Length: 113
Length: 150
Image (cartoon, rainbow over all chains, first blue to last red; front, side, top):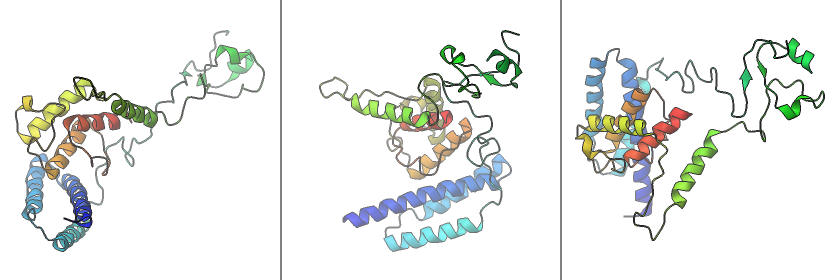
């Protein structure tokens, strides 16, 4: 088993992992209810499992390309983003000040007033 | 100085005592720095340090070869273990921090599902590449703790 084979196989595994993650997240975006999501996620898993035992590298590459194309076609236009994550509605809103900095909220009133 | 402070608007920062009466140069700072300008990227170096410390504590002639210095809190770890046990439908006692996902019978897609369930549970978002080298339950808990703190 050559080094190039192993490297290519690792790259494919990573690609499939990321594709599955994206597709699963997208499934959750499309499903408005949890019980709909379970069925969709199960179907998605089955579609991945169907090609589990494919050995030929070029076939795998083609399958990955097909699946990525399919994913891009059915991507959700307005995906859910965790509010605190980059792109979320609360991202960098009211960040905690750096350590060593203290803000005193005394509204202009001082000790010597 | 005192008059300046009393006429200043709302959110005033405290100035350290040794700076307070030194003159006019520092008066326009609304935020004061205690110590040698500790600010900016506070999190990443800290985490790197714990990683480095974890590796350096490996003693060759010790009874236990590796001392795991975990970054995840016990509560996080417990929740992670419960979630993983539920996701893979295995008994919770078999899921220990050192358990590998492969030992639990999880393949790469199962790992993706577990991480997604954990993301939902904790309300965080881990990046796409971050979950790459996850092997053990402890790794997953550490990653969750890291993104939770960020």
